[in-house]
Image (cartoon, rainbow, N blue to C red; front, side, top):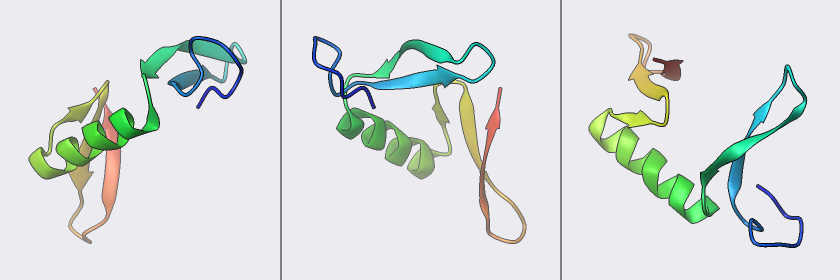
Length: 65
């Protein structure tokens, strides 16, 4: 979450570990992110480029497309 002052304050961004910098904002707020994650869990859909899966042990995992 970007907590710096400015127009992007409160948005949730993706962090590029290889370049050690922020990518584009993924969500405008943490509420929007939680809403999309909850919908993906309910529908077994995608959140951005990740899909949720439950393995045979009942554990939740996220895989990338």
